[in-house]
Image (cartoon, rainbow, N blue to C red; front, side, top):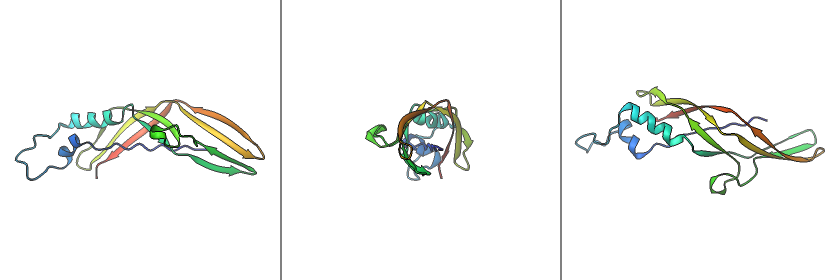
Amino acid sequence: MAIALVVSAAATAQTADLVAHNGFEACWAQALTEPHFLDLLRTSLDGATTCVEPMSGSVGGTSYVACNTAACPGAQTGCPVTVHAGTFNGDFDAGSFASLGSADNIAVPIVASGDLAFSCTVTISASALCIRRTTT
C-alpha cells in the first residue's frame, strides 16, 4: 500500500506584493526581499498538520480500509501528519520554489474484513518530503 502526501503552501497577503504589484500604488511599500519571501514560505508550512486521505482496496477475498478515522484537524477523516519544511530556494522568474523537509511519524489505522479479518495501526517513521510551491 502506498501513501501519497502532497503539501501546498498558501500564499499570504504579505507575499503577494513580491509576486504581483497593485499598479495604483505609488510605491512597493509591502515588497519583500527574496530571503524574507523564502522564509515566509518555510514558516507557513513548518509545523503545519495536513491529512492523508482515507484509502481502501481489496486483495483476494480481503477488503481493507486505511486512515478512515476523524483524526485530522477539524475532524476531517484521514491520518494526520505534521510537516517540517527546510530552507526554500527557487526561480523567482518562473515562480517555482522547493524545499526538502520531513514529516513526523504517521499512524495509519487499518481495518480488514473478509477472508482475513483484522485491525491494526502501522506507524510510518522518518518520512522525507520534497515540498514544491508554484506561484503561477
